[in-house]
Length: 350
Image (cartoon, rainbow, N blue to C red; front, top):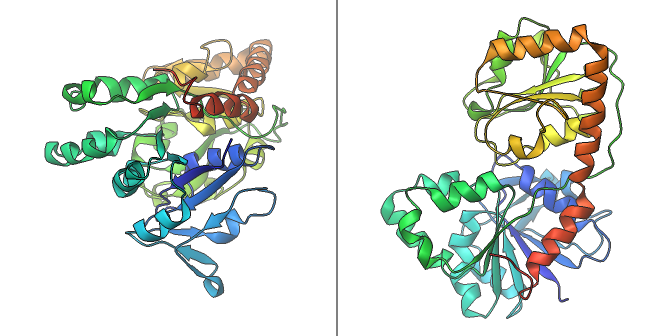
C-alpha cells in the first residue's frame, strides 16, 4: 500500500487528542505514512521530534530552530500540494484542513478521508458558510468518526440534515486507541482526581461540589481559568502515570465529549472513573462494571457513588479490574487494524 498522507491542522493550543492518537497510530510498525501540518498556530517542536516514529516525515512550513518551534502558513496550498503525489490517499483531521485542501487534492485524483474528532465548529457555522463547506465535503470519499455519538451528531444535526443526501462519502466509526497496555498504578494518597484541560465544556470545577479533597492536573485553556482552582490543589501538567499516583477515583464531568482520551487513560491505570452520561462516555464506560455514569451535574449522585466506594473496598476492586479489562479494548493495535480497513476503498463501510 502506498504511503498515506495525514494532514493535521495544529492550532495555537498545540497538540490535541486527535494528533496524540495519530502519533500512536503512525508509530506502529509497517505503517508507511507522511504527516503534514497546516495552521496559523505553533507547535512545540521538541514534543514531536521524529525519534522513534519510523517512517513519519515531519514537514513544517517554516521552522525556527533557534526558538524550538515550527510555525505554519495560513494558506499552504502550493507547498502542500507539491508534497502529495496525484492519486494518493489523504486523511484530514479537521474541517480547516478540508476547507484549504479538499478541492485541489480532489482535482489531482486523490482519495480523501476526514477523520472526524469534533464537528462542533462546523455545525455552528452560518448557513452560507456551511454551503461553502459542502462544496468541499462532497469531494470526500470517507468520514471516520471517533465515536457513534459523533457520527449521530453529524448525521442528525438540523444544520446538516438537508444536505446529507449530497454527501456520498462512506461513514464509519473507529474508536480511538490508547498507547500502552493496561497497568494498575498504586495510589499513594486518596484524592479525587481531574485530568485534562481547564475548558468550559469539560466543567472541572464541578468537582468542587463533591465535598471531598480534589486535585487537578491539566493545562490552562478555555473559559474556566486556572485561577479559579486553588493553587495548593493544582498539580500542573502531569503525565497519566503521575496523575494516577495521587488517587484511585477520577471524575471527568465533560459535556458532549467526542471520545475522551483521558477517561480511557485513567481506566488503563486501573482507576475508577465517574463521568457524565453524555457524549461518547456510554460507549467507553460500562456503568457499574468498568466505571460509573451519572446524569450531567448531578453532584448528589457522584457523592453517593464516592460513599459506596469508600464503604465497600470489594466493589472498588471489582470496578478497577473492570476498568483494566475495558481499557484493553481501546488498544492502538485494534485502532490501527480498524483504521486500515477504512483506508481500503473495497472494504470501507457506509
